[in-house]
Amino acid sequence: MSALTDGIRRVARAPAILVGVWALTLLVSLPMAVVLRGMLAAHLGDSLAADTAAAGTNYDWMQEFGEQATGLGVTFGPHIIGFAAVLDNLSAFMDATSRPAVIAGVAAVYAIGWLFLAGGILDRYARNRATRAYGFFAASGVFFFRFLRLAAVQAVVYAFLFGALHRWLFDRLYPRMIHEVAVERTAFFIRLALYLVFGLAVAASVTIFDYAKVRAVVEDRRSMLGAIRAAVGFIQRNVAATAGLFLANFTLFVLVIAVYGLVVPGGGGAGLSMWIALALGQLYVVGRLWVKLVFWASETALFQQRLAHAGYVARPQPMWPDSPAADAIHE
Figure 1 (cartoon, rainbow, N blue to C red):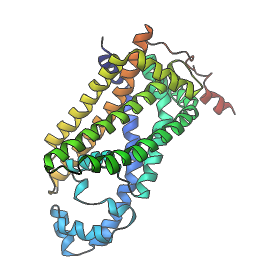
Figure 2 (figure 1 turned 60 degrees about the vertical axis):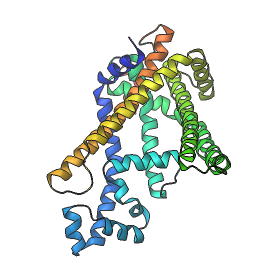
Figure 3 (figure 1 turned 90 degrees about the vertical axis):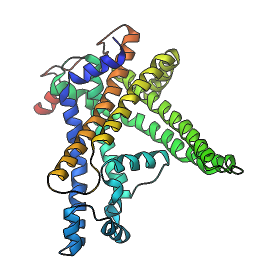
Figure 4 (figure 1 turned 180 degrees about the vertical axis):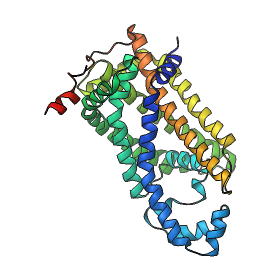
């Protein structure tokens, strides 16, 4: 069985995890939606623009709102509608575009939520059997502080990638490479090549940190620097397998985006079409989350396959009433 197939099956056997991470995503984003709704309602009032905005997409009014908006309001515009939101996020990622402070703050809260759940998720996928709520959250609690230390290393690496490396590639190297280029298409392909270089650097970093988490959970590692070194060693010994698995998972990611791009309606519309667009948007979010979970589950499966030990986890599984949750109740 391939690691990807095994990973998909492991995710399918634990649907509660997918529901849980979707609920986390909704819980984090809902307050922003409520605040933005209040800002839009206050700006529209009883004006004629309110009627046209309710009936469809009023681009003139969106532009007017954007010119006077502050804080969370600056994120509102045509770029958040339908598939344009996907393209905007992709562009912001590749061009290292900064987001408003409020968005960065919410993203940090969301990342901490994922960091807490990561230990329980990987533990469940590694064991490939039900761990129940007490086993899941016990693993989440054990690895949360370890993964916080790992996140500190990640922050330094990503700051270098999206800071120094990105500036060197696109602010220094790119202008020199196109200095005497007269054909716009050539300049486009040069920039595309630099995007590929940057993307490969980010992908390599993500892969190393993913396998560091996997090795930390499967082998119950306490040193995160040791887990990083072990992850690099595993990748070096299995370059073809890890690269092939990454490409397979990335293909799933591209397919999810492509399907969403084909089915999502364009801007405008109200009533039923609006609710259909909202439902499709949530399905896209679920698809993105599913791909992320498949990434983790398949990487865990590959590591265990190379160990010839499917379902092996060094740390004993907490059993009720011996779990940390039971101790908290007794206290």
